[in-house]
Image (tube, rainbow, N blue to C red; front, side, top):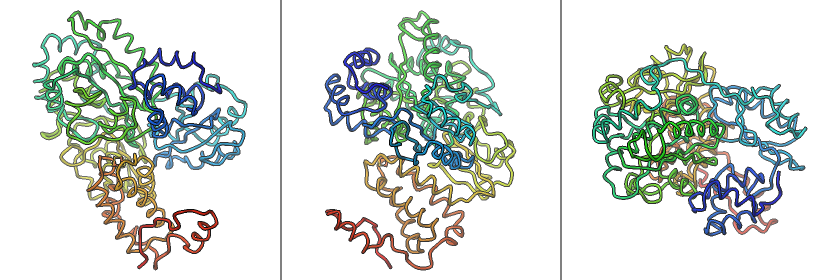
Length: 594
Ligand code: SF4
């Protein structure tokens, strides 16, 4: 690993990405890969080269989990801490790995050879426990593999020489419906779209009723029409930042159906009048870049991308933009900020991205799966698509199913299917609860099993995590609460402070230290967080806590402390604070003892 960023290195990186300020994140990613960190002098060089303030560059480095100012480590291991990883034994794997390496979780070893830490979710919930080692995804971890990884780290063996099967990512598709059962040949949907013209394709999208597959279900027709009518240089962006724990179906679609996704983007570009497209690929899916670049090159060679789409004179091309570890960037406006080389802080809306999006220009942003459906609609028609699903939720939904199920993997169902029908179809038994839509979705218990998957009832971006009767709902909710506290971008107080307090309260509950009054306070606070947070992350972060309280209240009550347990020992804290000459003497507990 290099110690300094040389002028030649920076030139090479800038040649690859360009010199506009909006490529900052891509440049910093490359510096991090080269040096193992982005040290102060590299921040200065990058700031100068891109003509952006140094504090802006430092702010971006601090914002993204996979960037750091240092110190560098030869091996950086991120263990996935999704609840499904825990169910598959990730805590034992962490103990084995850290024990073998002689390092504490979250700390850099004294010789700076290795750091092992937790990350939220790596998108391998169907093949966990999982980890990223220097950005490379490794699934199916167990004690033996953890020890073998430690041995190779100790031997300073480059990842290229590690066993290839460790890096193998498998996609198990167990149920196909309309979309997955009938793949398109590259170019056939685009040829039809060019023959019909943008107005006719837009009409097919209207007839289809296609809602966004990221979870919110916004009408694709309205989005494309709004973007088409907006003045300016248009863009099409694809949200491939599926960071919701339990979701991995976009990984599969990009690995096995990338042509259709890119074809959907190209058709969207024809409709809205864009010549420029971007895919926001989550950092955890960096291993997909070579494959996606290959598909892009093949499509350019076949005239399906480039300056003259199938001889039509229309132009469109796509670039891949890698994230750097920030769940909030899955939020549309935060993603646009990230595309522009900034911290992923969600924007205030309106104006909406269809009018003021990437670089302030009209942008049609859709999820990976939405683009796949759009390509199929362009070829087969809106009525074909709308023949499945429900009136409010036409079409089918690709689900990522994980947890206590015989066969985790990819399943496609028509919208309108009930939770119970899904559970029967996947062979799940003795089910206690299902987290539909990931931590920001709904924790469904038996009483919800006849509810339907769809925007009218239980929306989901694709995550469907199953928990059987052996699982503790409070442990699940605690994991989700920590996830949100970690992923809050910190911009607004209700979310920044509230998610941390909720996570702390759940820790105290698990330890038998939370009183009934504090639980009532936490419930009230959860509603305030939902009502007053700036973006969807904060507005949904309390969902697991509230859902579990609603469905499993006796479990909470059984753990309550009989009397108030102080948050801290005031005398001890004050003594320590005085000795350290702290200015602020009183830790902010936020609660008055009853
Ligand atoms: Fe950031 Fe949370 Fe506020 Fe969203 S709700 S802007 S994630 S602090």
